[in-house]
Image (tube, rainbow, N blue to C red; front, side):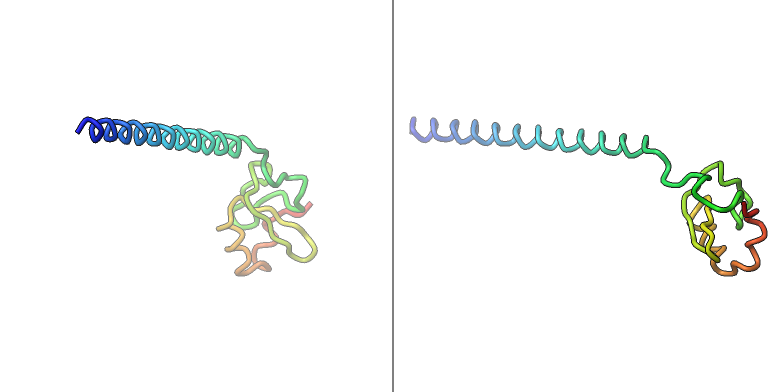
Length: 104
């Protein structure tokens, strides 16, 4: 009976040590993910106004200096757009919207 009691205590101790180790690993993973997310939010913008041939988003008229989320190539020009939605709207009828782009 004493041996069974000692064995159950040993198994319980081993289980608690394993549980603590996995909990610490989970916390480390969560911290690493949070740090990665923080680094991604401080990254430089992917596109700048100097990279595109237009001064304004041809769909909504927003200046490209305010921020560019997406680009498209049209008639050997690189056009910057404030959002993917604006780019998709432009691509439906580019000839009707190109004048609003104010090409450089």
